[in-house]
Image 1 (cartoon, helix red, strand yellow):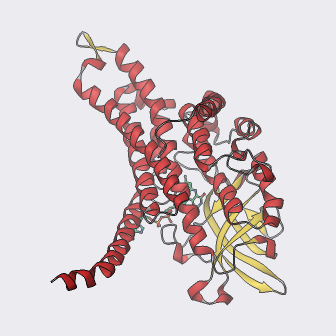
Image 2 (cartoon, rainbow, N blue to C red; image 1 turned 90 degrees about the vertical axis):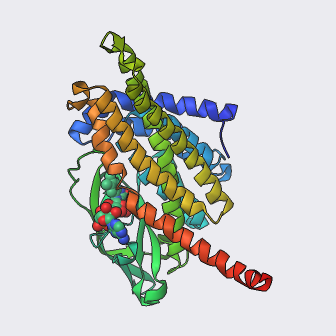
Image 3 (cartoon, rainbow, N blue to C red; image 1 turned 30 degrees about the vertical axis):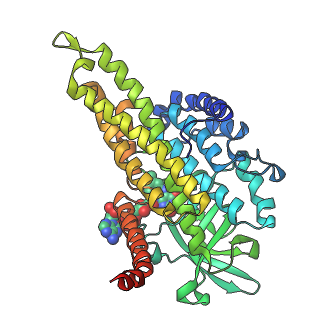
Length: 395
Ligand SMILES: Cc1cc2nc3c(=O)[nH]c(=O)nc-3n(C[C@H](O)[C@H](O)[C@H](O)COP(=O)(O)OP(=O)(O)OC[C@H]3O[C@@H](n4cnc5c(N)ncnc54)[C@H](O)[C@@H]3O)c2cc1C
């Protein structure tokens, strides 16, 4: 497991932390306007962020997903903007699916745009429910040698600013038991309409909108993997994104800790700095505990995913669960430790509005709990099935 950065990773972390700092300067303005910081985005892409995990032969830098996470962690530590980080998460799903599951033709068409910073979406949620993905209705129907895609995705990160991305749906003609299919599309094609940008409570720098499909043409190149075989790839993408929430939370919390420390050392109460009081110390210690645990869970999750480990899904869900819960807790501490200054409509309280969304995006906290239990139940059943004959024999 990656407890320490290599020298090269540390350099990468520092470099991207420096670039991320540029997002912090205008995060408040972008939040107020509900706009996306395309300038910082492009600088990160130009610095090679999305090329890191891509093999050199495909135009990348030949690193690993953990290397890419390290660079993203750098951004998370300085950007002070969960929205910007959520946009990175929406985008990286497109990179991962094309790199891991795409054909050479799909990689030739979409890797370069993704790496150069054309924004991507990872679209799963529908009005029928985001938690219960089995209720997805977006569907492709055969039309000669191609398909027509119909239906609507809702609340999709990056939709108003994106050029391309992964759409999860079905091909019902394959039969209900095995019809989940992943599509990859250019969003400017005929038959695809992006809805109005949603007016959200927080994470406002990462615009969300619906994506509507009205007979959008799909050619074989738009199908990722075998038609009807999309479920396992979808689960892998979901688990991968969940793993990354840990570094996002950790980076943001580290930044909050720096602000909280400065405040409690400077602010006097009853003739002593606030930092001298145990209740105050406890809040900041809890923030540090959260940041350490969330960070390590990202790298543990990524390692388990790349090893194909049986409990990868559990670890990724634990990471997402803690990231959502602990970021919200840390944002509350930040506000509380600043008293009324934290309660004003400013960059401190913005973190609290943003953090509420992190418990919903990427699968709610309760859904993570459910996934953890379901995985445990399956593991238990498998072990029980394996153990039973031995137990009986021993008796
Ligand atoms: C900032 C943000 C960005 C997003 N970006 C994307 C994106 O890029 N792509 C995408 O596909 N989606 C995206 N979403 C949507 C998100 O994935 C869904 O909102 C989420 O999965 C929950 O789905 P839902 O809103 O339909 O709520 P529902 O599924 O209706 O759930 C409502 C509540 O019921 C609870 N619940 C549901 N089922 C159970 C159960 N069995 N037991 C106990 N509790 C249950 C949930 O935990 C939740 O609290 C985004 C959401 C947010 C907030």
